[in-house]
Image 1 (cartoon, rainbow over the protein chains, first blue to last red):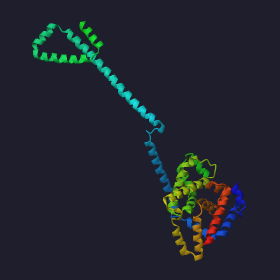
Image 2 (image 1 turned 30 degrees about the vertical axis):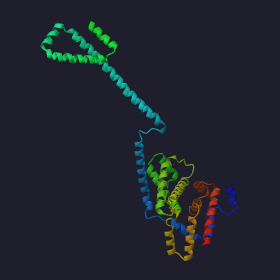
Image 3 (image 1 turned 135 degrees about the vertical axis):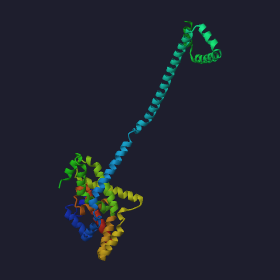
Image 4 (image 1 turned 90 degrees about the vertical axis):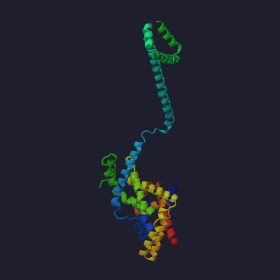
Length: 174
Length: 180
């Protein structure tokens, strides 16, 4: 507003375009003004004919570049999610590895326990006479087999807890 | 010829966007280019800026609400892009406004009489030394014949401010020529 008041007190500018032009020409020389403009508004030959095509191809290129960048950004999360995400991935990894380790361990121990029981039952099914005749016939082989079998059994027994041992004992006494 | 508004509505409705944009471009490209070139002088600079301006128009045209004239919006973008370009050039140590002023002076000197050449060179130098806003206001008023309301919207000032800029520009150029 202050500028407006200040301006209205000055020369008679701002009434009409013709008046403004006439005022400038009276101070600056009309011919020079038109020569100045002529020198500025030249362009290379056919520039305006080729400009739209050049521009549209540039726009098309930029659009395809933007699309490529968008496609490459599929896996990025917002920055505020990143610390949480890191911990979530670590926790999930631990759960999967730990869980599968525990599950596999359990199933292996159950299998060994089961096989031990079946082995004991099968030995029990044999009569002493049968065992003696077999030992007589294959004395040295049997000696090695028995020793190996004993070692195996010892090794298996060492992995069993008290309950399991008691169960096996019960089976044998039966 | 269809109005700017018709092209814009069709563009925004995604009906043959490229054709409607190209129609707008062809209609206004010369005025935009000349306006830029009056500020930076060099063709390569003016071409760069003009491309940036039209790319921006392409990107933003969907959001244009037609609350102002399309040409006001277009020239405001052109003005801002040119100012940004000039500021970048100044930071890099080159001045686009004076890059081919010497060529122009040499060309003028060879064709005109000594007195008119002197005035011509003086006018060119004086205008090139004006603050950008005054320079643009003078160009838009004197050469393009825009009203002050439109000029004020383009350069981001009041109507009174635009009138004052025109007045100061003419007075400064006159003072510079008198010193010659």
